[in-house]
Length: 540
Image 1 (cartoon, rainbow, N blue to C red):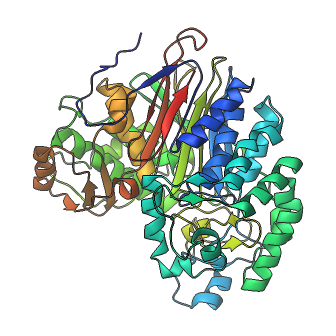
Image 2: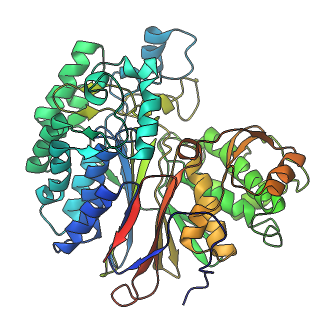
Image 3: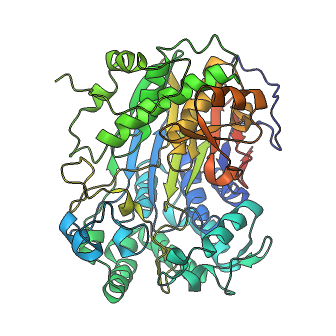
């Protein structure tokens, strides 16, 4: 038996779900599509791919067919990691951007072709299905094709973000955006029907070719032609050269469990560093929602980010080893910088000793999948391939143009990445597949929810519902309005600079959690879905 307290003190519209086969996503239609696959004899991988394809349609303000993706999965006997993020086009270099955007440019642009790296999500779906799936690949995409053709009623939170994006001229002025996502000259209203027949066309091509059309066929040619006609550098050769990578995981111990993250180029290592630092601090003697407990977590997270932003990049370019960043002795050294009486602005250390969707699925055979995909910054680059409904991500903006930096842009190099699936094991056995989406909120969400569950015994839905803080930079943080007033004032008295932001969807992330209760064929799982999104955990 687990040690959770099943009563929750936080306001929520959700209750934990118990079942032997579960899919948890930020949109109910995608969750149901995944469940359909398992009911038809498929497994958790089949469910995850089906749900991911649907999510490109029902939450286009967060992801699309031009997204990147990552996954961690337990296949019944071992843990696997998949990096389906794409590299820079062959034409990209610091000189390319300085010539195109000015000598003073610090990073590639936020929108347009200068932000588009090779999309990896579709290749990730195909790789997962080929290695671990049971059902035919085309069957997995059938629910998404149906949704694209027949349409769906736009839900409340998705509509809110969609409308916010429609007010951004840097996004809405990009080629193809208005035609795809402002079909009536505006964002859809809540409950208004949205159809996306161009995406249905692409999904059919992807389904019939197991993704080949996207990288070495009709869709690839359409993307390359669109780039040529509108000033982009990406070519058919860039797309044809792409394959996702099986990468394993990196991990750290906490409270008798192992937290697993995807290794760089992602920021998952930030959560591991933060937990490693936090283990050196006496935080558990403070109540879970106290300012003292939250302060120590914030300071540990700050220290982790300072090293992550300085050192993490495409692993081929990193100047420090991952083992050095995860060294417990280094964590102890960094923890000594934390002052329990005041907030600080930390610089990076020297470890050398020498807009996103997340979903998870689990089945009664024991397979568990932690999956994340994203366009970044909402609708991504804003570019949408005409006739094909491919909204392209803007992950290239995460590169730097700073000479000598590990994350400096280069041909074929992968940028620093924010999206990170997570997985928890105990004594080598699977325990939980989970993730919290939302830019740099992701490792912060991993830290906060795990501390609540593993150290304070809060059940997954309670840990999901609980108020969150978000570190920005320096001593600047945001807190959710339902955080206890005495905690907010306590953090302010410690020197944290608290800004007023009341948009939980935009600023505090949203998670999905599946916790294994025992033998999955007998005891099943318990799942949680974040009330900060429109989603649901469903099961049978």
